[in-house]
Image (cartoon, rainbow, N blue to C red; front, side, top):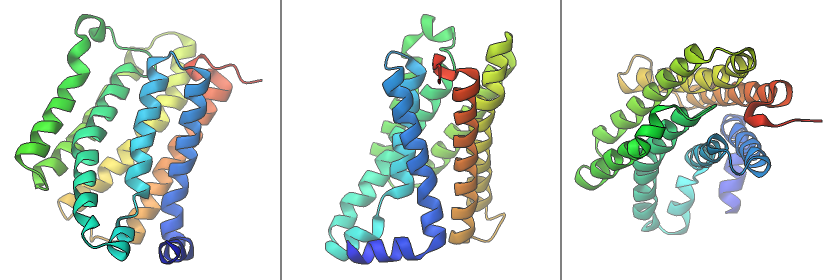
Length: 224
């Protein structure tokens, strides 16, 4: 643990990649405490928890403690990225900032992505198919959020969309572009560059959400 802490705290790029995850997780937890009955607040907390795990899972720690633990870690990462993350992404998009009307008619719709992720994880684990499914779910999430922004007509919702949804579109949009560029080798892979871009995207998303909450009462939160 001490070795992992020294490497993490001693590398500014690694540290920069971790801090935005803590900020977003704390923000999501506060939102959920204030609005436990809001579907968007619950979906936001689940998504930020998964995102936090993705950005902070100490993969190297298992190798230093027990090399056999890498097998469990690899399987956990596969389930997190292929099964849970796409489900949380799409579910969040369908209920943020308000549940879409189609969910009233088809409440099971959000679980389709979960079923797809489970099938991929069981039938084709550790394959490129899971990676493309994650990428597709991020692009689909951005598309749904853009549709939400277009269909919100009242002034308050438009302000919430501008900052809240706009920040989320910016965050996941930048990360999606980074994943596309790395997947198709449009740019040379550089871990420090990826950490810097991801941290910028996540921190920008967190700041925009904070503005939407404090100024425009996103999640119906009144901040004194």
